[in-house]
Image 1 (cartoon, rainbow over the protein chains, first blue to last red):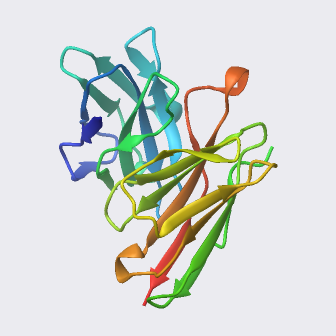
Image 2: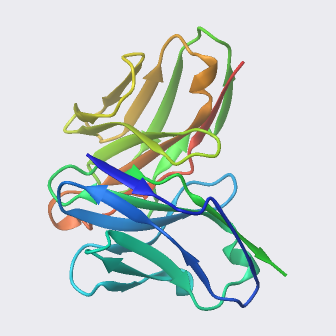
Length: 114
Length: 115
């Protein structure tokens, strides 16, 4: 079984400041890792994913994340945030085998302040 | 290329009633998964359908059932609705073989309110 912990439920940050959203996971098998964003009253949109290869992954809207296997972490970063980045962010994992079930964290609400 | 589409977008039911939610996967995808997202929480896996059969199931009671049709579209049925079933229900699709990019594509969701 897998579990995902997002350490911060809410992160307020001023516009143009950097931000890091933390994600730790637990799994007895190898996993793929994902970050999804959810804007109010909408579904989930994929920001980025780690399947294999380079541990630094770049995604849409200037976001990036680094996979750290020894620390079982997959933190999301952006060097300069915009008001439009205000949303709920979810970290998720799924086994690398045939199962495609995602296990999500509880989410981090990012609020960008003017 | 249409993405994942879900209907209805919003609906209100009363306790004890039954509800059916519908999902059409992204073009080229053959696997559909359903998730329940309660207010303020992350999505929880309900079940997954592939080749018209339920392949995996999360920790949900038998009141939750589903179906997949030959065109890969899917339905989620919930019987004997409880107040706690109020949530956003998300459908996600994925592909196999060369269509498999490892990720799930989500629809906008169906928001169910049980009164």
